[in-house]
Image 1 (tube, each protein chain N blue to C red):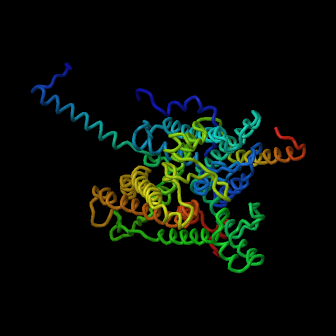
Image 2 (image 1 turned 90 degrees about the vertical axis):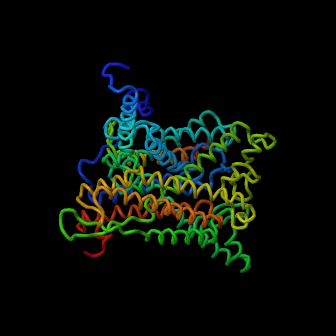
Image 3 (image 1 turned 135 degrees about the vertical axis):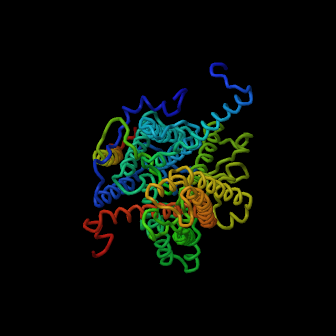
Length: 482
Length: 90
């Protein structure tokens, strides 16, 4: 290996960074359940307000938060975004051979992984200080406040990077970052529907949950007002949002059923044939997640430039081009409302708004659909479950597709997999955006991501369950009476 | 340049160079693009597993990390409580 390689930058940090030990032997089903639940509970526990901030009102990324499990003004300010984006960026760069990594060499893999980890923690640091700089946590903060906010947010990021590593290393099911987002999205979905906590708004105390709000509205307001208000309140979850998200979830579950069964046969034993299913959602909800990573970067860079450099001055030409942020109505969200670049890359607030500004709707949808399709294609080929890899697996197991010779298995798979992945990614993007049209503020897309991750988890849990069986305590719980 | 000079002049030289080039290219194309395709676990088609390899470094037990994480969260709670009690804002 000659020349400079990006991953070599991580070398000095390797001995310093904490590294979770790999389990000596595969963990039992019970242990995995406990670790996964513990990780989820700790993530939910971290929804604590950050200490040392002034009141936070101007939230520029409120519609991206649900997807990455982020909560405004809490330790989960950025959620799992840095972890996910760092993983995506490094994997993409390695696939496109922009950074040279020899995945067969152990030291290279270690460096690759450590650079991902460093970049993830670095992004927590960067985002925290970007937000501090732009006055998100309040203006005129004292030096100690800045230190305290940094320690809390970067510390939380560090902790969650490590916890996601625990899950990834095989102590839990599936993927750490996706566990966090899925747990948070599920908790919020329930909270948005039946949450009984009260929130102080400009119109007095209101209930968080849409259904609870409907009930309390019916008790206190005239009937028509009560119904209309529970379907349209814009600053807290409303019933329209809830139904849009629920329909999206059902749609995502429905899409999980589509698959192509490739007939396979054994090369060694005669007349043993089976099917190898290739799902329409071959890449799950990852492409949609990656699309939102891109949107996050576009918005955060725009936000930083407008607020950090130009102080959100509406007369400046750069602010006119990029977009001038204004605090939106009741919600305290920071939105761009006049026609500009950032305006195009943010969702509409509701059905009427999306019909009234068709260009924005089309550009926003187009960005997500196009990037989803692109990511689905790249990911399906490069993630290690591409046609070549599956063909190699087939060869190892002495299996081939019926009616095909060994050599053409890879070609046949290459005909099916990317097509399935791209159309699956596109279908999910369209589904999520159909939910977003109703003003779900990212919750419909989040629901799609959560359902996709949950199904992937389910696959892994099911295969684990079959291996370690019903003798386990939690196993019995999952499998019913056995 | 020189050394083992191929007979037949430039045509074969070119051919040989192109051959070597395409060989290197195809070799590069066959190198695995992810930890999973190299056969060492990691992200699958629908799951993002980032830290699945064991690296050198400060080895820590997962339980210790979980307990320290809870400790971290409680220290932030403590900060809030202390600030409330002493009614002082740093």
